[in-house]
Image (tube, rainbow, N blue to C red; front, side, top):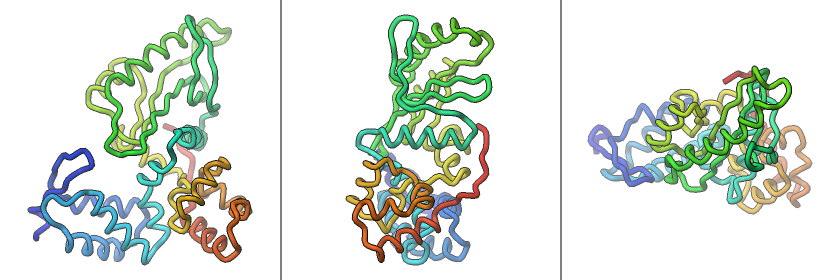
Length: 287
């Protein structure tokens, strides 16, 4: 069947025409070499049928990548790897904090702060120069889950209570205080509209366009240990329980693998994949 006539079914149930260029871009973003992009794309287009789930397309692309480049496969798996950071959402908060650190912010996770009326637990407090951000992390372990307008409505009310107290603190009169919501999936259109109108910063998987979570992670070279195809689910869970969330942590301290009972042969295989995926020389950037 010609790919131009095929419609795919997204996780939400929505159907749209298959876009080969979108697949190629996602493969290129994972650092896949041109000839392998052609191979993977050919493999995917040969198994297309009308109504095919996007998840099946992803699995086929990942299968082909994994055979020839674990580095590209691990990076291509980024969205699913973030979904695997659950179920508590705490590793995602740590992930967001580290992402912001690499963008020049100083961060704290799980901070209790006093508002004008009540105290609030802040997922991530981020500061940079005169900027102060109260950040709420909304983690979902299913990609079809979204943040609706109730989320920014609620966060805005909390932020305004905090802002009143912040502004009364010595030295804060001329500082910028803002609320920020980060999710690993998407915002509904109403949530985006309200957030923008209320002056909240919003960051989702693909929002703002070309500067979403997927773009920032790629730019700073930050990949979770759940990206590693050489680890099984139990091993990933044990590392997350030990607060080992990033491939860079394993790159810097491979002995963490021995702490979860891994033998030398497998540890060497995992370390090789870690070295391939990590991009420790990625430049920091400012949002």
